[in-house]
Length: 412
Length: 86
Ligand SMILES: Cc1cc2nc3c(=O)[nH]c(=O)nc-3n(C[C@H](O)[C@H](O)[C@H](O)COP(=O)(O)OP(=O)(O)OC[C@H]3O[C@@H](n4cnc5c(N)ncnc54)[C@H](O)[C@@H]3O)c2cc1C
Image (cartoon, rainbow over all chains, first blue to last red; front, side, top):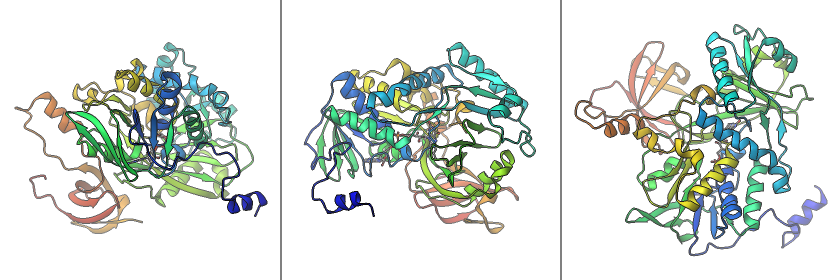
């Protein structure tokens, strides 16, 4: 055991400064209570404090920060979405990502890789062209490329892919990956430095309202008076909404992922195949980070299955036969909060002072900065930010769904 | 391998089944408002609990009802649909 670690164990006081302080008790009231210490909740707290000077804020996290989907995702960051509202929103997020490490003075391992959405059918080629045109219109770097270009950037690939030969791809040069838990820590530390309190192992058990307005929050550590509450609880969103009797279209299916043992670097791009339902990138530690589509039915837990690595590996070997001897090292799952149109539900709700940031399903990590920023605006002004009006829960009532499925389902 | 009991074919691996979703009763489409209809189509009680769901054993195309705890993924019982959703 390293001596430093022993010193930590024996010392009464923590011998090194912590990322953020751990207050002993909750105050009796806050201006804003944020439920969920994932990237989204912490980012919102950060921008509330930094951009709007609202610092009497607490973030309540029932486990540990970043322990939800923030610390379970496969960290693909991109903005080549299909709808105008989606493309513009995610592109703003990408702009924020680029400066985050400097802003936090914390290395997020933000690594620009280039992102390929492989097409194995005429229909997939058509969607690629469509996405490229929408993207170019909004100034997003996106183009359709042929199999040779794919082979040049991923020389180990088998272009035949079993029975699904690769016809081409949508190539998105800005596609990136980042270190996920560092994002939560960076936002958490930044918010805490500006006065926000972070309470871990603090679970919200109920939300009180009076005359259609939020008035307080019950937790396992006591009662809090407040008039503004944000739920940023991803896979637990329906449980929070049940406290307020709000029904939404959100449904929870597990999403699984796995990593291989570390290998020497051989893959420096991100590859996604909608037809094979798989995606892969190589982390800075050399592990292959791999995922597939959602589990096929509703489950509210983070259990893993054997079917998942079996199915995913079979498809992966069609694409990269040379991986047959490589071992799978870990697998895990997160609870994905899905919506019928693969777009989030953000903004105000029918209860005054209750704000929702949810429906992030399989694609919300990349949106962490922009959702934090736009939700902070929405809470500070009690008015939805213009970038998120298309994502209001009203869209279902008005039959105005977004059409993001083609660009969001397996691509993350 | 998780096992599910088809009311006709008995115990089969879960990969042979297709999940449709919780059973909901539609309002009368001739008389309900657009808003009531959208509520029926889109909204749901997404919280965990014991739910009555439609499942299908795909090789034999047998549709049936499963009562399942969506928190623990425990299948409590399965039976053929008797009409009258609830
Ligand atoms: C396997 C997997 C792969 C993914 N890959 C990608 C990807 O490549 N790219 C991408 O952009 N997105 C991806 N996603 C999606 C992304 O991870 C999420 O959309 C995003 O991280 C959501 O962040 P969040 O802060 O909203 O939620 P979370 O990080 O889940 O945080 C919510 C927090 O709320 C807490 N909480 C819940 N209930 C309560 C309560 N009652 N009281 C207090 N606290 C509570 C939870 O403990 C949790 O920590 C993936 C998801 C999974 C599961």
